[in-house]
Structures are given as structure tokens and as C-alpha cells.
Image (cartoon, rainbow, N blue to C red):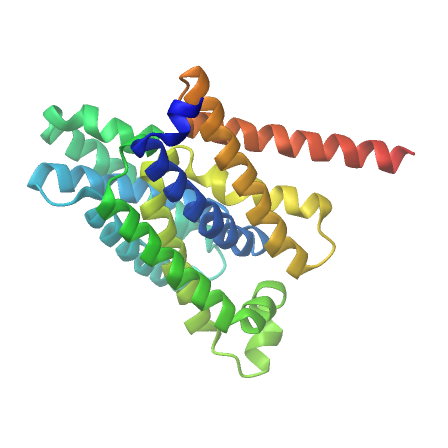
Length: 269
């Protein structure tokens, strides 16, 4: 165990995991409370298409994935305005397009399919310095945005109509949340994988809904739950040679089931 903890690759994985353990559940909380949890899956699938294109043209894959996620965010906002009554259509349309484009790019670049698999299921042990710098920058941006606009985000999350009536520029803040989410997801897919990234967005939020009694408590709880799962998952995966992304997600689910069980027993009592 000591050899794993002191190894260079595990150190990078731990740093990257801890940073994502702050930003992903934080943005996920806003999405879950606004019933937009599926946006995470959508942007993750679109990011994979960008990653595939990056491998195909020889450009930094995570960077291209980030650009794709931002473009998808703009498209979702446009479609949500076009289908106000059926806003969820925008998410379904963009997800379908992302999956279709990714499958097309996979067939064009069969030689890099093995590399792309790391982004599908996570490859946290392969994080390099550039990855960590990008993750760090995104973390700083997210934390600053949430700290500066905490009151506005709180009002927007729980009563968007009241926020609009009070003069809050709801369109701007909706767009800001979408962009921040796109940034977080695009840098998270190499850690837990595109197929599992939504778990890191939603399960800590689900845990906070079980035990937190206020919005501020929820913000703290989601981060604590995510960090326990990330650090614990990495240690377990390292010791028993398991897939780190899958281990982190399963540990999150175990924590959720434990909290639900404890709450059920206390309610029955």
C-alpha cells in the first residue's frame, strides 16, 4: 500500500481526483435541484466525440472535448428557447447527435479506439501535468464563480421566476451554470469516464438530499461525500488492482444506500 501511495502516478491521480471531487458534485447539486441532471450525460457523450476528433487530428484530446462540450452547451440553450414547453427535447437531441458523431469518428480512426476507451471508462492513473493544470484552472474558475454569485445561484436554483421578477439576469446565470458544467464534465471524463461521470454529478447530490437540512449544508455535504468516495475508491482500486472510475462510483452508491438505510431506521424509530 505504501508503494502505491508514494508512487508518482498515484500522486497525480489523487490530486486530479480531489480537484474533481470538489467541482463535479458542486455543479451536480445545482443541476439536480433544477431537475437538469441529464445534462451531465449529454455533455459527457458530446465530449467523447471531441476526444475522438482530437485523436484523429492529433490535437490534445481533452482540449477538443472541452470545446465540443461548450458548443453543445450553446446548442442546448438555443434549443431550450425553441422548445420552451418541451425543454427536455434539447437534451435528447444533443445527446443523440453526440453519440452519432462519436460513433462516426470511432469508425474513421479505428487505430485509436483503445486510447478512447480510457475516456469512456476513465483512466485517472494516466493523468499528466497538462491534465492537472487544466483541471486546476477549471476548479479555480468554478469555485470563484460559486463564491461570488452564491446568493444569485441559490435564488435561481429554488425559484427562477422570483429571480427573474427581482431583476436577476436569469439568462446570464443559466448560461454560466451550463458553461461551468461543460468545463467540469470535459475535464472529468479522463478521471471517471464519460459513461460514469454523471454519477459523480448526481449521487453526491442524492446523498446530500438525504442528510442536509439547508442549501449551505448541501454544498458542504456533496463535496465531503465525493471526496470520501474519490480518495477511498482510489485506495481500494490501487490495492486490489481494480478499475478506479468504477470503484469510485460503486463506493458512492454504497454511501448512498448506507445513508438511506440509516435514515430509514431513524424514521421508523
